[in-house]
Picture 1: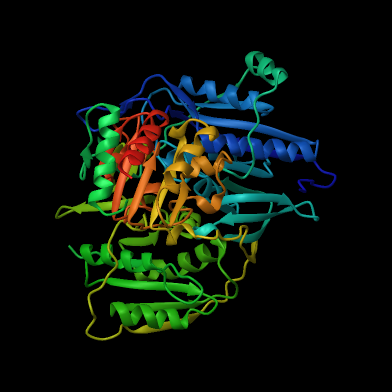
Picture 2: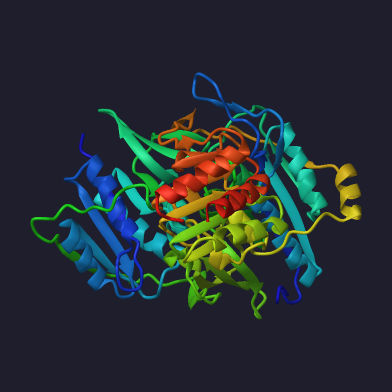
Length: 261
Length: 321
């Protein structure tokens, strides 16, 4: 593995998102607004891989600064601190005063406001957020900043020249497309690109007391109208009931009926 | 209400991928009279003929200097598209589509709506629907800007199959756009195939995060072993955890399967997973969460902890042999 960038300082920005716990109940109000949950949040799993990738670059080349940024209400500070526990040197909170859904183009525009002219060599995002699954913030941000971007990145290594990356992009059917990507650039990483570690005690203690850089977000106009609703159970299958033993018996009967056993 | 639609074809090495024809179905449902297709590639002439022949639609074949890069595709498309004045640009929600569509939207001064699964329309406007929260809820989006870029989830629409009266016209363009910041450097196949490939198995028993720990994979394997020509599959998170190799992943970024029987064990049913297994002939889902989205595609649903349920199932099966 080669993550070395020869003889120069490297600045990485990792974009992290706070998402509702997978098990948390969905709350949508009568007006089609997505209002909950109001507790039970954690870091988007894809972003844990994004952070670990930044930490790997730092491990192989010591002169690397990692900033982690998140956009949202005060509660998102929890994932920014989590990012610092996982190895980010600095946490940046772009503060939005209200709760509620934010489209990817708005999130990207907020990050752009902060990140432009900061001299980041590499911006790493997760491939998508687990809650909204737009898979857009990375490529949108890249285009807004005039940077090249690759998504579904499953391997990223510094090239000999120290100013470009060898990238493997995961495509359908388990194949990989390979690219050379000139820095500065934005990559959106797939889960599985690395093995995220647990936080070290030093980082946990540091994340507790180190202040965050806080920026008040400006208003970004919306480009689309949207509403939410709980999934209609279009084709709800037959619910097998009874004791667990009775259910097992019923499944065996069904398998016989379909001539599979 | 006329809607001019541009479809960007998704192609393999020698043919258009099935999703291209699914995009045509969506477009034809919106406005069958104003559709055109753009196909890009180093050598896309034959594919352009195939598409024009199967759909009867006019096709623009753009011959590129190198293989796909998102930068090159955005450069070419942002030059070609504005002159054609579309209201809607339709792209497949594949690795490639997800890669270039959002940036293309920015270049066209508009927004992108990704992973669209269905749409509805009124006289004045189109509404696109996509899944969120692993399929537990839906999001309806009405674009306010024109053109609008949408990416469509593979498998969401049937492939277009109406026989055309005559093949569509083909316009050939030689693009002189050169890669600048992103250079393509070929393809790789990271893993060898299984002895019995997942997509040829007649029974697939798949595990998701709900199995709890890798020690419970043994239950999945024992269940699979009860069937002839069976294979063990898994959801993306399970492969990410390293509990199963990626070649056993079922879903959009893994394998697409349509076995006689698919048993989903502890799988939540994200659209990405469902896209890879929904055409199975019989689907049985076991999940602790009664609201799991997998129950919407399953024929038979069991709300149970599979660590308790599978041993009982194996036991009951023994009793009937």
